[in-house]
Image (cartoon, rainbow over all chains, first blue to last red; front, side, top):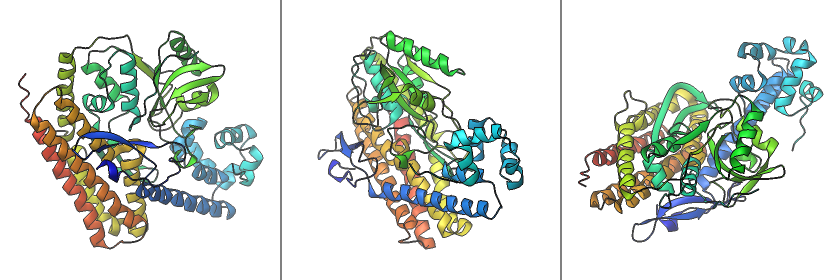
Length: 135
Length: 338
């Protein structure tokens, strides 16, 4: 890529910092250039976030229909999978899979709920009611 | 307290941390491309049957920490590297380094990295930063991706150093043990060994999912994605490929350009015209990665999406695989005569 072709499409990262790119000058020698972002990358990231939104919406449906516990909703919202939830909470994966069932979730002690509430950055009340405070 | 330390922006976090720390240790000639080449940073692997963020598990890089370790090893520089199970111990070790005037490289997760834009904060644990000062409760941070130095509170730093999930950093920190004097002869030897190691990683890794064969494997898989996954999911997979390639640590295209720059810099130590020619091959490979990304974007944006569009996409990767096979093949045959 030549220096003059380094894309300058403003991305959300570009608002905070420009990215350093290696590119060639007219004589073919490598040098560096700052980039504000690249449309192709921006749309790849947008695509990923649209998918996350879809998954969160689906999870919300499942919880409202009593097919899953709110843990699923907050897990999707936090871009987590069971492995990550397990690593942060200290629960085993099979325990989390049980906690994803609404009937099991309803009987969880506050102590256990607190461990979930902490990694999702919500209160126990909000965890139970699927309440979200947008930051 | 703040150490006299020059923040340098880089294209990739770990090579940036490596070159900055080595510069600080007295190797003025160290640059990001040299660190990348000597550390044999170019890699590719596509692990089947495993999903990351609900998409394909593709990596354009070696394991976190490798570039720093390999570069220092090749240059005969002793390294201190520590992991911690105890958060307080991790913080007090870091503080004691800073008090001694030693800037420290830290592996961190980006999910809780407060100065990153929210859109970029996935559970990705292989980011690298340098901590080089502490003022009251704020640590002074040189993040090679950022244009200027930044800060984190001690709570924020602890959180990212102890991020959980795949490749959890576990408080890992590292730095060169002492100041060093490096001869040109040592640097030349390190360049050669870095190139040889990278040739081995890209051409001779057994199996068909890593190195240039891995790129070919992905190319062949892509052609099947449309039928196997449906158009929507196949588009998500391609978006993930592009993000791994261009976004997370500059990956694919960007890495080829850094490698091209490395070969040009090597030319000033080994004036062999072949190095310049092979550098052009890597530029071409980088350009083709970017062309492939544009094709992928057409698909995930929904502008195109026929089977033949997927075939074109897959063929780009086959073409890249062949290009890089040639480039590394030529590197493996270079006569170093010195």
